[in-house]
Amino acid sequence: MTLSTRRIRAVVRKELREYRRHGSVVVATAIFPLIFLIQPLVLVLMVPSAGSATLEQWHVLLYMLAIPMLTPAVLAAYAVAGERQQGSLEPVLTTPITAEEFLLGKALSALVPSVGIAYAVYAVFLGCVALFAQPAAAAAVLRPPDIAAQVLLTPLLATFSIWVGIAISTRSSDVRVAQQLSLLADLPVVLVTSLIAFDVIHLTPTLAVVLTVLLLIADVTGWRIVAPMLDRERLVTGAR
Amino acid sequence: MGDGDGRQDGADRVDPPALSVRHLSKRFGDRAAFEDVSFDVGRGEVFGFLGPNGAGKTTTVRTLGTLIAPTSGSATVAGWPLEPENGVEIRRRIAVMPESPGLYLRLSVLENLELFADLYELADARGRIERALRAMDLAGRACDACGVLSKGLRQRVALARALLSEPEVLFLDEPTAGLDPVAARDVNELIAGLRERGVTIFLTTHRLEEAERLCDRVAILNTTLRSIGRPDELRDRLFARTLAVRTLVPLPEPDRVFSGLPAIEGWRGDGRADYVLTTSDPDAAAPSVTRALVAAGADVLSISESRHSLQDVYLELIDEEKGTAPR
Image 1 (cartoon, rainbow over the protein chains, first blue to last red):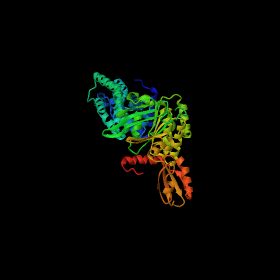
Image 2: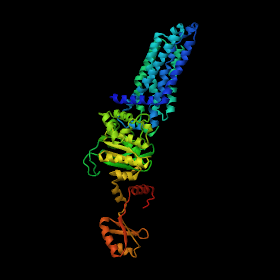
Image 3: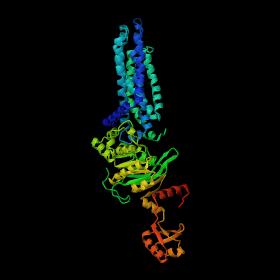
Image 4: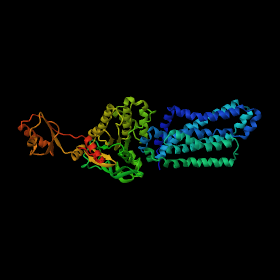
């Protein structure tokens, strides 16, 4: 199967234009990063030097991996259900675009801002910690392996979240329901990253590699799994 | 876009039809959306698809537009068999304007058209967009967000979008639904312009006068196809041709005047001094009727052929199915 990059680019460009003009989308995508920035930031900045040992046990940066999970979920959930609700899906489906091209365009347009926002929030967090935290606390947080894991896992988790969100969006006729279900579906993964962050699940190099490989497989196969779910007939007739 | 000035009667065209439908049916569970529908639409023809709400018109458009898979039967759309593997090729050659324009309201007119030019991978997208905007008289609104446009203007944008790819077959699903008379007239004029350019158009509509004015042939659907033909053919098929005669005062002996006249098959009174004469050839009958009336000393006010509208045909067919069949 050949994919048309022009059609994929067209969908991405259209989506990004719509995000920019859609105030509620901007607000919805800003909420989770703020929540997951403020909480660890307060924790690290308030900890006294004597308490830095606790921070060494934790992977505070990994706690922030909830951002690339939850931010794109909102955007991805809108991808199909939103178009369907505003009536713009049918004209698009009557063009030569394939389900794979349409969904790849949707996924990329959710991935780019989500990863961008996540990296921006990390940069703010790291900058604040480096500048304002106790040196011992800063040293406990700014560990190169954690930063590397953060950078690597962010696009992988975001992509996974996007495929889950789009899959739910193809089956939902209501945007709000799609968004709520997408967030719910992402919570188990957020729970795992949080348990790792607080060392309830002890992160070993083997576990890190296994989780990364599993995410990679899910991301690469995700669009193949989701594309058949974009059933034109069901989407235009509302049949279940 | 089409074949120039290539509109022809459906019966004697040489080109392969733009649409060829054979015994096509679509069922949703136990409910038939449409059943055993067969017709051809010639290249450059404007084909009207009429029927009451729920008759299956939109489902037919969606089926021929590859959005819905038929339950049985076959069809060829723009030369391609209607099969799942041909979906992309068919969609390359057609354009569908659904009843709701489905525009991206936060994007400008231009941005909406740019998106669809890219989805069709059109060469010279800029030129085509400019031509479509000019054709729909939208050049001055290109940078306006679609959300601020009136319903009539949105329909125009949707038409411009449908024309971008210069489709072999253009499906218009209720293009004037919900428009005020002025906006509906404007859209109809645009469709008439496309007709003159030889675009093959498959038009579903509730507005019978619109179908009568714009369409070369019409089909009347009520789950099954009730009738198909040129509007005048349908009239002739359903209604006897008649002459309406009005005199100043009632004729004392109308039977003596009308009986035995050439080409007159019967007559009946239709009011105080009005008479309806059944004839197979109104042109041949009218002079002899005039002469007979003058010879009888009648003061003739008018003699005219009774015209049945497409609406009469439509109502006749739909009522017939309900079993009421008023004539």
